[in-house]
Length: 205
Length: 183
Image (cartoon, rainbow over the protein chains, first blue to last red):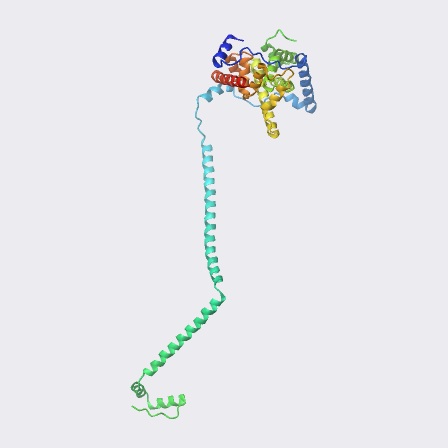
């Protein structure tokens, strides 16, 4: 073993067994003698296959139509290492801005749609809630309510009639005479005929 | 055969189309064993190594026209071999997620299937210990320990810094030492 490598190994790993030969991995007899021949037969067979399938393709093999600026490969490595800053052309920058603007618009539309949808839902929910409330009130309750309403209405009518009747009772005789004295005799007669009153009762003042 | 030609000349002959097959065959014969063992140490089984090695050289045949010669030919072949070995193991991993076996267990089985395997012998314990390492760490250890490759050369081959390689090798050695002492 090379002295340098031997020393290096000893320093790195003192426990490493020294002077181990490489394991003898079996190789078939005459393998290397025949290898190049086998290889060339395979290459020729593949070349012939390509030529048979497409002579044109075989002819064009290896031809590179693309133009590469002269000195490109020589100068390529150094350019990478200098970390040169490449400024994007205006068109490219504008394109990027437009992309972001389009994305923002789309997001805005989505948010608006979702918001509107949720409001409608809320209104709908309120309506359906009230509807539901109505549906929850039993028939019996309705009947009872309207009965009460009728009762109330009737009571109110009676009250108002009573009120008006009381009003009439409150008008005294003096007031009636005063009213009658303002009317002429003919007017009184006319009224009595109209009212179907044949005899005028004597008014006691 | 063009044994007298160096790598650059062989590549030139290949690209010109002059002696394409002959040049390529010379390259194969020159590097096949080194490439084979690099693959074999990763995949363990000879049949798997043979499959991977064929794929490596077919890729080399298809890609040699575009080889820019900024690196050594062997370095280029070695990188292809490394990538193909790792791809092969990755495919094994995907298959093993179905069968619940881990790749390490499968590699251990293949090692045990070797003709002279004896788990009591240190030489085989070392191989078992190496299989416990993550693939890249395994590669670093094998290149340093068995191939005695300098870190600088390894750095070019694996495209990793010397410092990272040293750290990887040191960790590997510690793990292997622990395994051997405990088994």
